[in-house]
Length: 283
View 1 (cartoon, rainbow, N blue to C red):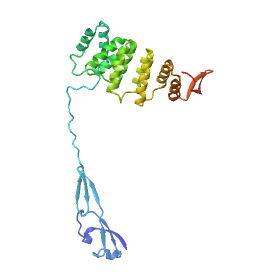
View 2: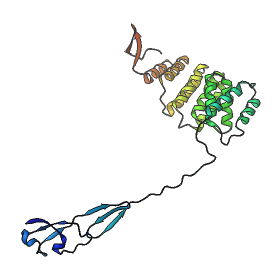
View 3: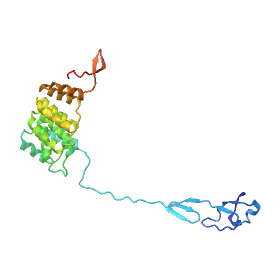
View 4: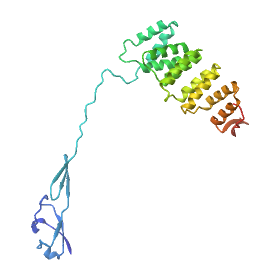
């Protein structure tokens, strides 16, 4: 068997799909002298010649096929002329709102009228600026203003989030309005029963514990266990203290044993030491 390279003009083989200047290999069972004369005993292996072009790839073989690169057309983006998602300038708007509210009397009609004027020329409700204003008022401990702004937002159907509810419950606690906090909590519990975070439960238990409403603390804790929300250690201590104040010492120890960690850290000789917590130890 001989392997030879020869010019296709000499062999006379019909070449389809190949240019006349391209060479290909021939494997024959005959020797080199009779390789050019034999046509029936030899066979050819045609190589595929790929030529890259700008439009695509051309593949040469027994049949010429053309593969073109698919071009995906990008659709036009929709333009929303009246929709603004950026929060540019919201901080300055919030600061202007806080300054405006600081000079108003504590009358509901006056405050609500000023807030309505603040959003009168807005295309969309400035929810980001209002939320930042709530945080500013919270840092300044202006709890009465926090309650007014939060209630106004909820009356407009805006800001009904867990963060707003948490800020409003804290303001009710600091402003000594436990009854209004209870009404808001009942609304939250019936509306968002399956999606109340642990932070709101902890906030409500802290509010009731702050006002020495131990039976209310037990009720909120019962809702937590029903919804399978595990309390943190501070909340567990408040619940255990409520059981102890109600004379239920066994449940007090049970809460501490179930929800407090097995170990705690204390400072001994200037170092932080990890020691085992005893179940009989009180908080």
